[in-house]
Image 1 (cartoon, protein in one colour):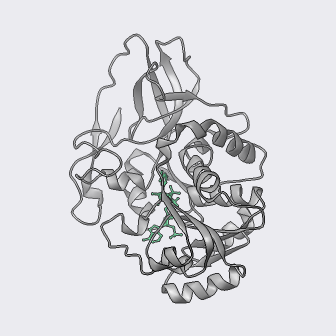
Image 2 (image 1 turned 120 degrees about the vertical axis):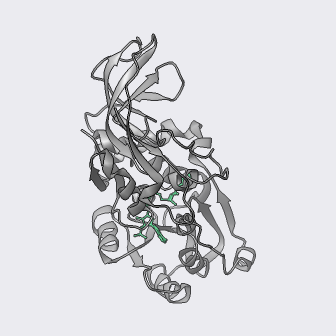
Length: 334
Ligand code: NDP
């Protein structure tokens, strides 16, 4: 069983030398356990925070152990009545080829139906990133049809799910993304009304483009990036706008992400709320059902960036932090 461990913690920017490829024996199954062969690993921005020593909202990733993370795969051996060989499952198997899972541990392993939804999408649009978009849209922004909502990192796993869900609710949806290809994709393939390329622009220049794309102002913002992107939208916020603060990826490698116009929160009576999707398990079934329908019916066709082979995981992960992914970043093992 090949695995990738966190070998040492980054000083400043994360690098490939923080990780180590290790080969380990797969332990024999005890009663109640199942052996899962991973088909895809999920790479997610939150993993960067966990590589640091300091506790954020999640515990740090322990050194010398398998990098933790979401996985989808197939049960190859079972000593639990709850799972049979051949079941397709989603779990938290980590950066390795196989995992041994206690089937009774709540939330560790879930069977999924791949009739209408491809297995890999359970790590993206019909998984944690999709639910994240749903929570911020429905529970925090709660837009009325016709209102304008914006999202940064628009072409990513969370951003595209947000766009698809907001369009289904009759909103005007404007994205912010890095580069013309990503912008074109969210407009033409996902159905965004407009998308603005933020690269090489300051907040003031960006806000002028936002004024054109959102002529009635912005009622809701789903923020994934922070810094210039957040500043620019803040300059176009309507009174009583809502900001769902989901991520600040511009600062994950330790860069400062100052907020330049906090006074606009007061002037416009804006409500800003941060949230962590794993603390809202009560919405997951409802959100996953809606996302499953959107994807299963073909109305929402999410895009994936797929790296090949376990050894490609570190580089693909570092690429995700630099915007080199285009859609949900996965590693394909089988
Ligand atoms: P994405 O698929 O969106 O990939 C990350 C994207 O972020 C990149 O493609 C890039 O897009 C953008 N990006 C990277 N670095 C920068 C930078 N310095 N400045 C601006 N943009 C950058 O990832 P996810 O959809 O998985 O996650 C999106 C956000 O949601 C992240 O901030 C993540 O931490 C957050 N999140 C929060 C959760 C919660 O519970 N609060 C749960 C899940 C995710 P581009 O090229 O367009 O810049």
